[in-house]
Image 1 (cartoon, rainbow, N blue to C red):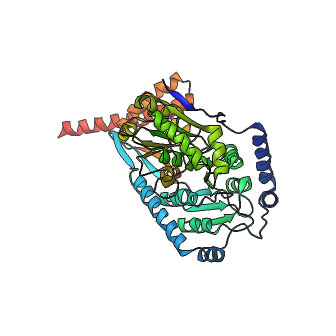
Image 2: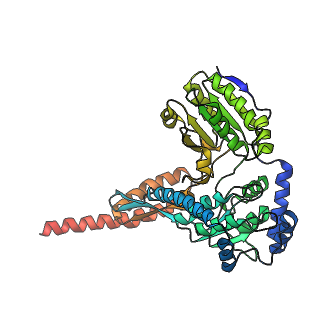
Image 3: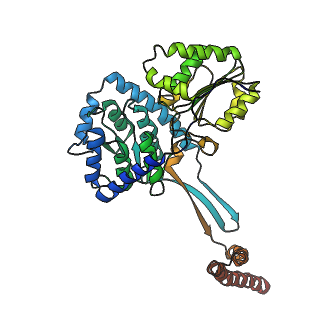
Length: 440
């Protein structure tokens, strides 16, 4: 029976509140109706940003990139190389298929990149440079011909490192624009940007709700909520590293759950004490302390089977495993966004540089989906070809009867005409062959 040593003071909320949803709906309608004029007003209101052009020119981009520290550019290139390499391996694993299922009946599928992607790269307190790699670069590996990327200004200025990352990732268009007005511009199109087919990238509650409301008019990657992290650990781990990993994600925001499941009561107590100690000096303690107080949990489990069961019930975005048998969880866990095995890796590696994608399911969505990956930018489409008259007639006979069950007369007629034409053709062909053999 699990023992809770620290319980969350609050429960996580799912979905947007009614006031937020209504506000976002009003903003989207405004952009839809008034286009660039509405975008300019919203950008001025929310970001104090009203440039002559939201899109950065090639000359502006070159100047911004040239002003970034060369060491920082090298770091960005290293991270992008890891992400590009893994995305390419994923792409290479996606086989196109073609098979003959009956004589003269060929079925297949192909993977086609979408035509255009809008990538939102957040700013604010945490300029999410890494999100440029995860969205823009992965889309380009998939073969997307046009990627339009937006990031907000920070303190009415240009986030140079983020722009550099977008450029190095291969963005075809870069816009200095944030919030609902940015994702609305990408999804709906305005005078200064053509609409896109798929909208990706994390953002604040307003951006997330805008993506939810825009879904259908465009595709989206995920309906992302607050970042979640789960640690699964036994007495082979130590409290310092567990506390560090919990707070490393709790700093994302005041509603980010951070949970420890352990079979060691001593580790649980050590971790709680270490969290309290680290919060005294952590530069982001103003956020992390609230998240830990309201959404942090520490649960002592009877055995690894109970940790597994609870982990699958939580279905968290990030799951770190530090036990004497990490492969047990690799082999048996089913509900998670990304798995980090052993003390030598951590969520921060995945968020920034190691090569896997950091845009992942939250709020239980790991029960039914994985995260953003190269395949998200591809459409798997099927095709079929029938070249044998007898096979067409055979399938037509089955199809006709099945259509009749469903009262689809027009569908049935499509099958019946093939039965009449190609069934007769096949029979005539067989008769001709038989006559030829008899005379010879």
